Image (cartoon, rainbow, N blue to C red):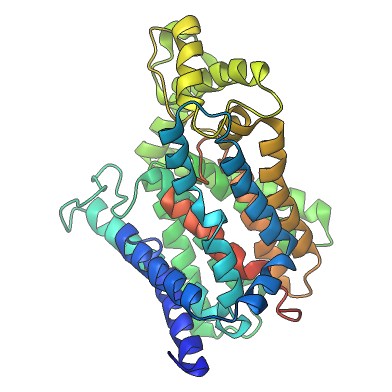
Length: 400
């Protein structure tokens, strides 16, 4: 068995590697996760680990959220799809608590640096594809250059990374002139990259992030915050709108599809989402408290869809995390999910460290917004981002 010092060092190297691989590769990140989990399960000291976990209200909320999915299997007809959902959500049962016991305060800077290094690589590749220096690969096209993941995941992650860089620019008092210039250039290129790629949820979150950051910069000056928001955000929006054909096209489509929605013309990205929400609400009305069960969303949705909109395709995912949880587990499930965000906010407000407080508040707000447009706690990249950063942003290192 590894000596304690060696095991601790191994854990930290693995976590830094995970932060780096997280935005780049599913297989690589999963390999690191498996190694971390196996080492943790075999390394003993279970009482101390258990005590760390149960002392955290956030960890308890995460475990309860997952266990509700397990309980929801009792009234599930489609058992196999329920197993699929349990598999997708297992990060909340095992990975988050494990990471919570392993992260160390002195390594937080390295976790974030590794993550930002990976984002810089994705950004460089994105620009190389966009400028046609290299051929498109994996998910990338010249028109929508997001090589390592789809734009649905890429843009929210890019928005969060941009926030981290901007926070360093505004609040890191020890930053050197060289590093300031580098971060400023990095933030600018990331912001441009946001609008040459097609993830509308990420673009919305980008503006939300900017608004939060401005409030944090003018923490005690709300009038200045509002004035800055009213100047900065519209300026960036209209600059992007008139500079990026892709952004302009997707904004125009979203507006037209929203205002001209009808059952007969719903076969668009926005139209499908509106239809998914309306049909999901019909299921929710029939099962408001405990839902239809962990695995029965596809079956129950299809029943309503066949009655209300038979000319439109059915779905296994309503592209809205709130609708999904309400259908599966009802109001009990929704309250359980929201409790995770509640404890994140509460723990952040109580932090004496500005970085932890600011980022800890921003992360849940970003997810609460973007989950309106997709089930972002089911996707690999975004769920891993949420879990990984939650493991150290909300840990009281003094007590653990």
